[in-house]
Amino acid sequence: MSAKILDGKKLAESLRAEVREGVTKFGLEHGRFPGLHVILVGEDPASQIYTRNKEKAAAEVGIRGKLHVLPVDTSEAELMALLDRLNTDEEVDGILVQLPLPKQIREQRVLDAIRPEKDVDGFHPVNAGLLASGRPSLVPCTPRGSMKLIALADKRLEGARAVVVGRSNIVGKPMAQLLLAANATVTMAHSRTSNLPAVCREADVLVVAVGKAELVRGDWVKPGAVVIDVGMNRIELPSSIAGDTKKTKLVGDVAYDEVKEVASFITPVPGGVGPMTIACLLENTVIASQARGAGHNPAPPTRRGQ
Ligand code: NDP
Image 1 (cartoon, rainbow, N blue to C red):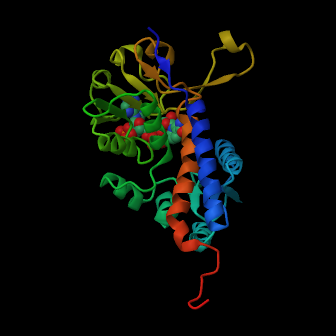
Image 2 (tube, rainbow, N blue to C red):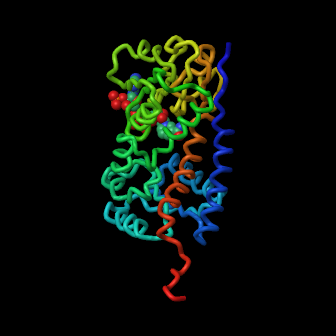
Image 3 (tube, protein in one colour):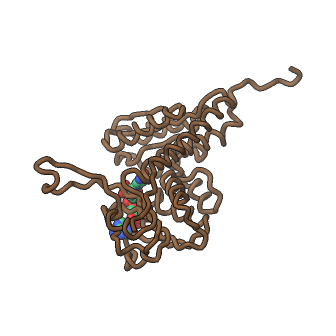
């Protein structure tokens, strides 16, 4: 039997509709709309597409988005000065620095400089620490979106065996924390894991965030498992399909055609985790604005006696 598809595009649409309502409510309460500032340094083509998509998605739900495009030779000090300005700007609720950064800029230093309460990517060590202590505030968008997809599968996580393949700070580690918080028994696998196929076969919920095209094969998956494929890999099509022109295709870290015959639910690539990541960024922006909102009402304070 073929797995049911966890449609991230559709789920992201309904999440965006909820976010739009949150944005309108915030606007009515605070006399301004949530503000999201995205910083792009350099001209990496993939990053240009990602940041433009984020700006567009923000505008569609009524968030006041601004994209700051800085030249590739921007110094770390210049970027830090911009962050300083945005950190103290009352109308900026969310700040996101698109990665990767040019080599003259220390990535960790920059991410650490974003105020945790404006860190809508959830990468700041304070937010990572809160998540690890079971006190989530701003949670990284891709794991957050993946959890919503798992919820769509109606899979009881309590007591379930979950395996996360990949241990990056932005996907694998926060994903494992969220599964743990949902009372799953979590195993984290990575490039040094021995007998990875056997580890994966133990999973009732398998999340793969590796960056290796179609690494996970059909016989690595337990029958009936829920499979979340975070990977996004662009591969060249063989000339037998593409002809003389070079054609590429986006594939995940999971061999979709094989795994869908074994799993009960699976996310497609594209159309699975990707759209949820952007929708969760918008959701995080509203969460950040609401958390800061109370102290930033632009209406003049009422004076005593008036
Ligand atoms: P990283 O490169 O930061 O981390 C990759 C992880 O995979 C590492 O922990 C690495 O192990 C592990 N790994 C690498 N090779 C193997 C292997 N052969 N077997 C087992 N584990 C392996 O990647 P990210 O976490 O940033 O991203 C992972 C994938 O998810 C990428 O394809 C990326 O494009 C995609 N992505 C998709 C998003 C979306 O919105 N859909 C958002 C973010 C990422 P080790 O630590 O030992 O080196």
